[in-house]
Amino acid sequence: MPANNLKVGVQSMGRFLSGMVMPNIGAFIAWGLITALFIPTGWWPNESMAELVGPMIMYLLPLLIGYTGGKMVGGERGAVAGAVTTMGVIVGTDIPMFMGAMIVGPLGGYAIAKFDKVIEGKIKPGFEMLVNNFSLGIIAMLTAIVAYIVVGPVVSVVTTALGDGVAWIVEQSLLPLVSIIVEPAKILFLNNAINHGVFTPLGAEQSAQVGSSIYYLIETNPGPGLGILLAYMFLGKGTAQKSAYGASVIHFFGGIHEIYFPYILMKPRLIIAVIAGGMAGVAFNMITGNALVGPPSPGSVFALILMSTNGMGILLTLGSIAVATATSFAVAAFIIRNDASETDDLEAASAAVDANKAESKGQAPAFANATSATVKSIVVACDAGMGSSAMGATVLRGKIEKAGLDISVTNAAINDLANADIVITQQQLSARAKEKLPGARHLSIGNFMDANFYDELVDSLA
Image (cartoon, rainbow, N blue to C red; front, side, top):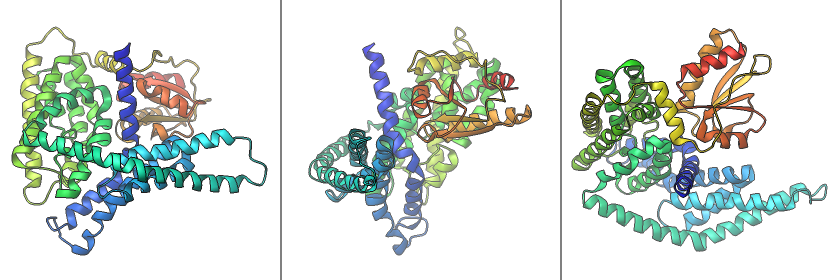
């Protein structure tokens, strides 16, 4: 039980951290593109345009993170408090305050949320606006002062220590060992938490100093997953082999890495292959000095190319993908060829994924009582509301239209759920979805590409 609680705690913390960054990934990409284009070593150096780089990473990006963190905890008022509080850590240091924003943004939102709960129903009529505005201003001022005096200096020390530690790891050529942690964690659906909660902020700070960062290439490299899918294509059997063709296209070009996770759960020893592929890719980038100027999101080959550095950057990035793919494929091919004891049943593997990452004891819901008369809108939701949920919504929408049903099907992030008759999420996200939209009917799915799940739902609706 303690180990399970620790796992759940790590997952929850990772999702919370990534939840502050993921809605703002577009801003990170904008900053990365501006950096790639206009800095002195960029594609089209421009001194005037390059002046955008510094203020964006020092002020804009941390403020967006702090605003989002405050909103996650305290709604719109909490968002404002989170942004004001974040200014306290920004002006108190001379380094990009991503870590500080992740701490004090939610702190500002929490302070507002607690105050609002205490005074709920106690404000005399006519004084609501006065109390709301001044309470927000006073609390945000106090939390900003605390952030400036206490949090900022502490985060600066911690950030410096972490930077020194990471520099030592790089100097000792040990960075490839990070894949031993990263690749298994991805299979637990912590990929977004690791990438956007850890590597994106670290990469942004390093990129601000030297113009690019290898951290952007650790989790996002599609090579390890592509090697697994290629091994199934050539050596697998049954539904796994047939589905691997389409999965490889979605994974490599679409950047949706979650799609290869069930293939590893079919043969758990394949985790060795993705670790080896990840280590090989990181080692290649270390040896060649390859890095990206901004975060590629999603982890598509197109996004990685766009974020590559000037000169040989694109070729080196493609080289790192090729090395990781070849290494992962070689190990996976050996495992698949010499392992006939485990199933290649993709549906069983999807169920294994569900069991592996489940955080609740709820069973997959039946579809009885769901009809087109009572259901007018369905939302497929995930952490980011983009990759895997978008694919699932596309599959379900096609089946709904084919059945001639007048039902809206959209995709969204868990935190953005607002109105729906049915919400479809992966099981580990169901509890959060129910808290966000308690009035909807919630269905759990193991794999967003599970056609049988959608067929059963459409049959019940029809």
